[in-house]
Length: 464
Image 1 (tube, rainbow, N blue to C red):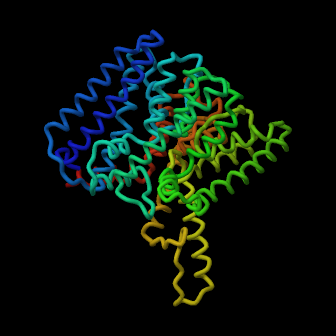
Image 2: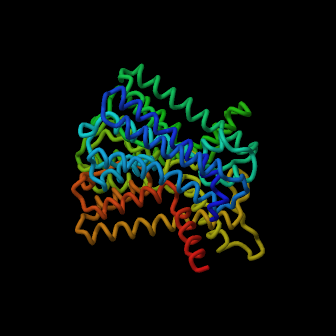
Image 3: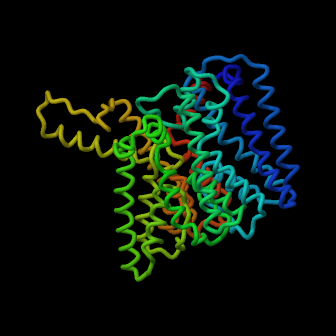
């Protein structure tokens, strides 16, 4: 990566990031807390740095590797900036990093109960999740970049472009519009359901981003069914919604193999989870069962059940749902429905080849579109890297003396950017385990292969 080549685009990203920190400053001012100046200074420094980079640069075409660097910075910088603000205000450095990374990666794991946190910090965690949900890079494409190769490269680091689509700039703006409308709908629904203004905002931000941070320790019963609806909607491809609206064809929704897969997997998860709890004599309503399985699969991370008290069979089911995750092109995390479909279709192709004539060509198709081998292998690589990251993290926890099941559960939640957690995760665990989980959240959001590609690129540069 050449700094001179990415300065223009990095500057635009930083300007938007800096501007975003004005929101928590306003919240701090409203609730008369001591964070206003800190967030205003943070906003000014980041925006000024972005302006200086943008002003003294020339707009050039960038490579895909360059776009990956920009994507990483767009997630890493706000997390580090918020970490510094929390440290200045007396929070433990590792807890501050953990909360900030959990926010921008839309995970929702936390070292604190909401009663322990000021209103501003509760809001900024939700705000970071909302920004991280659609991605600051998508905002940059939608409002600041001109159409072209650069916009496409950056778009590819966040969303999957489907067929029958115009320029990525138009798609980016459409996605942002849909994201905003969905958030507004969630806010209005939650407010009408009885939440106060502040709580409705926090829950709306964290539902549509599939983030899962809450404004209260106990999830409000009044919004359980509205949250179920918005969790489901937020876990599907926003680019697919664009197609439905553009062509005015609901059939695009019904044709989506990702949506069908999501529904089927959630039904299976619902049945198995309910049976697992029933066999363990843990009485849970159908509503709570549906809510928690959908929360795991959509990677939102809301909970109406104490995860620590779950039987191991119930935890295993949620682990599978958390690792699979939402649809590609959504705000959700996990391996993604699309990759699960690729995996099973490739497995089916391999089995067919075993008894088919040698000259017969087997092609993997998704929604009647042929998928080339290179794309298949790239998706399978992501799955393998997720598993490797999971195993490495699990070994570190086990060597530190922690129990297998709870360690696996929390690591899976971090890699899937979910946020469901057991009592194992608290601010008394070792600092290096907080760092491991923070790295897992970061890997899960940016996807392991993105980070590995950057590390590989940096090593190649160092070798000359």
